Each structure stands twice: as structure tokens, then as C-alpha cells.
Image (cartoon, rainbow, N blue to C red; front, top):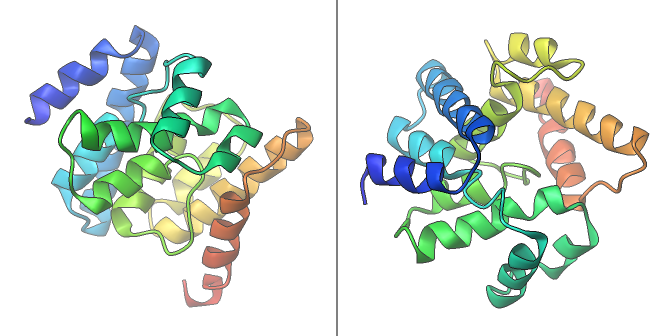
Length: 189
């Protein structure tokens, strides 16, 4: 498959508003990839496919999580986390994606993970700061993203954790682990 195939297949999976979000993430990821000298082709593919399964039903996602033996603890947390891991496997099985950087960027784009690679960081951050995002604090993250992926991700994680807690939602452990991993390097940033 080529880039146009990925675009076509992804567009078929979602309503127009989510497709427009995906295009903004692709554009934002391209800017970040250039800024931080990250593999543009990998970033582009992962950004196109990051929300591939976002509009699958809960039943479809649960079935896929069980079928593909994805971490079962996902089912104990908000459904918003499920589409990334499922999309990563679907990208492999249905779209032929074999590159681990791309698969990881898709898988962890909502939670992050310790020791994220550059492709993962770019896609994670692009999804958070794409131009239509309006959540409180996003402008500060955008400013940090001009100079440091890690500092921007640390702030985005802190804001996400605060938001989830304020809404009474449980925070997935990988999100805390990602913050701890990046925050321990803050003095190095």
C-alpha cells in the first residue's frame, strides 16, 4: 500500500470532522518532524493511521482487544484509550505496516509510554496540539513544542492527568509512567 491508499482507507473509517482532525494531525506532525529532524515518512504514515479505529463500536473494539490479545487492563479504563492499540494491530494485519516505530506511534498516541521514540513523540504531540484543539493550556504546549518535544509532552501529560482527575476518570498507568520517565529527564532538557 502507498500513502494514498492509507489516506483513502482511513477516510472511509470516520466522519468528516474526524477526517479533518486527522489531516490537521498529519500537517502538524510534518511540521514537528521537520523541526526535530524525525523520519518524515514514518511520521506521516503513523499520523494518517493514528485514529483508524476511533469510530469502531465498543463491541468491535472489545472483540479486537480480546482477539489480538492486547493488554486486557485497557478494558478497565475509558474507551477513548482502546482505538490506538487496536489500530496498531489492524494497521499491521490489514494494511501491511511492519515498521515498529509506526506501530508504536499509533498504539501509544493516547497514553504515551516510557522511552518513547521520536516518531512516537511527534505523533503523540501532534495529536494534542493540532490547530483545532482548544482545551485549556494547549497554547502553552504549542509554545514549548517550538523548542522541545519532551517539555511539551510533559506539560501535555500533566494537563491530561489533571483533566481526567477533575472529571473523576481513572488515569491509565502508562500515562503516569510516561510522565515520570520524561520528568526525570527534565533537568537534562
